[in-house]
Length: 190
Image (cartoon, rainbow, N blue to C red):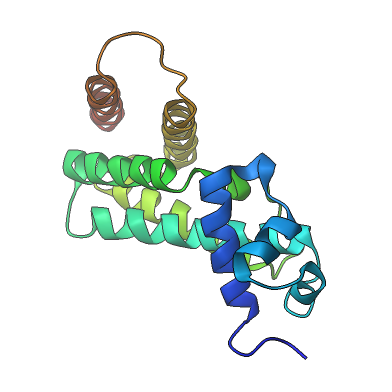
C-alpha cells in the first residue's frame, strides 16, 4: 500500500530538490527513498524506475524554466525582454542545476510526452520575445537556436565554475546580452 500523502508528483518534487543538491550524476533511487523516509522498493508504487523519475524531473524543469522566462518577459519588448528573459534563464540554471541537467539529458518518449509541451513553452516564450525585434519569420529559427546555444552555454559553464578569468561574470553576461541585442537589431534593420 502506498504511503499516505506520497504521490508521483511528491516523489518528483523531492527528486528535483535532491538532484539540485547533489548533482545529476549522483542521483540514485536509494538516496531519494532515504530523503522521503521510505524504503527504496516503496518508490516503485509511485514511479516505475529511475529513468521515469528523471524524465518527470525533466518535465518539471522545462515547465519551471518556461514559466520563469514567460513571467520575466511579460509586458516587455526588445532589449528589455531579452535582458529579463536571459537573466531569468540564467537564474533558473544557477538555482536548479540538477533539474536543468535532467532536462537537457531527456528525450521525448513519444508524440504525447509532456516534455514536448513543456519544451515548446520555452521556445514559445523566446519566440514571443523575438517578435518585438520584428525578425523575418524565416530567420526566427536561427535566432532561437542562437539564443538557446549562447544562453545554455553561458549558464552551464557558470554553474560548473567554467569561467577562469578574473573579469566579473555579471559584466561578461551583460556584454553578451548587449552583443545579442545589437545583432538582433541589425537583422531587423538589414
